[in-house]
Length: 223
Ligand SMILES: CC(C)(COP(=O)(O)OP(=O)(O)OC[C@H]1O[C@@H](n2cnc3c(N)ncnc32)[C@H](O)[C@@H]1OP(=O)(O)O)[C@@H](O)C(=O)NCCC(=O)NCCS
Image: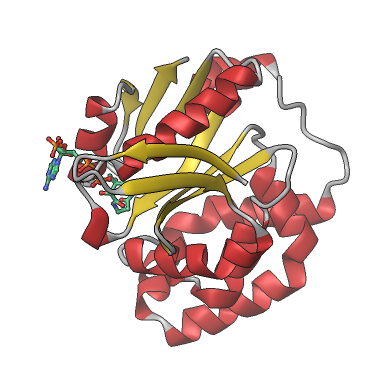
């Protein structure tokens, strides 16, 4: 079902829709093309298919795809829970271990950067061995960072041939509209400090920088 239509700078018609099962592969392909310099972009088709599927018909996760005529030109993956990775790892633990091992031996990028992902490996192991659900509204967690407890974008990308046309801002406005309707007062995201174009886009798009460290810049947007 189409949930938005717009006229972009070049009067091209963009439609933003929720990701459906049939769209998973096109989103995976866009993900791989757009995130060549990111860890998950190197995790391969199978991993990304499992991951993107988490955003189809979910109550906690939200996926949007931007269409120009019949071509997928951008997407957003977002979540309203901080247990998304925990659930994902628990559900797919065995296959994820096999995929990670395979990628480790076949992709030098994964070998080089896996050290920075130990937090995720720890989360995966915790997810497997612990059966008590974590309290998402834990007070200390809320104090640590507002971006951890609000609805947040995990990934946004626009096909490089369609950047600068307003596609990304159509995607964020559709996401923000839906989150506002669900009662959220703000949304968050983070990006890598070297991602100057993404940071430029977020500032232009009404996001406010909350904090930054060596690995991430955190933004929030009031709805
Ligand atoms: C981030 C992304 C979704 C933004 O979409 P976009 O279509 O490029 O966004 P826009 O062109 O509307 O806005 C980008 C803004 O960043 C700034 N910008 C553009 N190129 C830039 C550059 N090389 N360096 C710094 N800032 C730049 C400008 O302010 C620009 O807006 P303007 O041209 O209207 O002045 C897109 O660039 C993308 O898919 N990048 C790869 C994936 C990614 O890194 N995603 C974010 C991490 S989750």
